[in-house]
Length: 347
Ligand code: CIZ
Ligand code: SF4
Image (cartoon, rainbow, N blue to C red; front, side, top):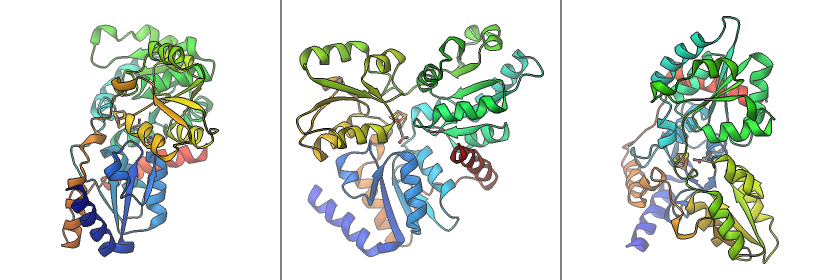
């Protein structure tokens, strides 16, 4: 039963004490975040893990987040992911090998004296972060993407943004550069328009998040018809037209702050992963929180892999001295990926 499982998780946590920190991403189900020492977005959580200094960091999240935690934490901290199946499909849309091949095509498409700077969103694997560092690029989050673009344009002529085309397009708009973008679809040889790439300032890799891409302008129109006073906040992984139709677009932290700072009785529709919307509704009962697409809103199938039974298992195994599902980035990759993250911290 859930009660019994809760007791086992709490008993294991008590036994491991300060040696353990449990992190819960905002998109995790209630049965996971209820046991988390910290709840937040991927970057906040990695920083918390490093500060907590615990020997074991059990990450309720997806693979790229556990990798980032391993990069940011000390070498004597071990990062554990309760399920190895929890892999973000968007991160998987830009595999380093594939990007390597595309890089050769892209650099061949431009003049010799044109420098392309690659920027990868936090939602990517460590080897891609390392690749970006090697090519003079950096990592960004959804809150500082515009600053990462500015950093890149101070040092080069073009930006290749990976993997999320929507965050890339929304950032191009924010910088007034929407007229100078080209898309690069690595799966479709026909669509690789090298002339368009040569002309564009910003090249957008054709990746997307299937959870955020699902929201449409129609959802916003419908919810505004149904609720006179509703305000809409969406994540910048949503399509451009959705961001334009919303009242606010912002990162997970911005979405949380919007609801935290809302006056009692205000109505907010949220365009993001459904678990976060549900948590915000639970945590702020004085605010009327609605999922932007009602019953059609989706959860993230990668986040869903973290079953509370797996959390129980990895914790009880630690008590027996067995480290299960350790996420460890290879040293050379780690060093470069850390450089890409440090460049982000400078901006
Ligand atoms: O869409 C995601 O997976 C986000 C926004 C993750 C994060 O916490 O940065
Ligand atoms: Fe990846 Fe989207 Fe899931 Fe985030 S919500 S982990 S970007 S698939």
